[in-house]
Length: 134
Image 1: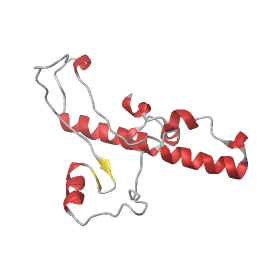
Image 2 (image 1 turned 135 degrees about the horizontal axis):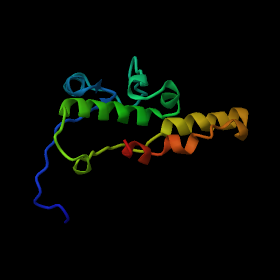
Image 3 (image 1 turned 90 degrees about the vertical axis):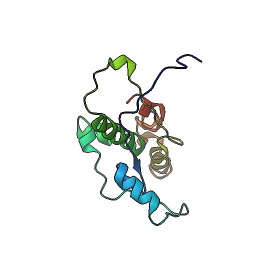
């Protein structure tokens, strides 16, 4: 395996999850009362705008990407200023399916208003690989 035997340092991580945003809230949420997977869980008071260059960019992003940006921002903030070559720095991102919420919303638009009303941003917004580009 390429890179075997090389040392790795984890300098920061970010979490955006239904049981908490940020490492302290996430950990408290994990240790606190459980959440049922049988219902929809919303992250209260979510504002993605601080993580985007413009409000338009935030609107054109699925929540999956918004959460990924927030987690990446938290990880970079934790790591501080790194004295390393950016080409030697990497990230790991995980998601189950990506922008499923966008797909669901646009299916409803298609059924209720017709195919001409479906957003031209549907495919790029729902792709999980878009989060990896962060």
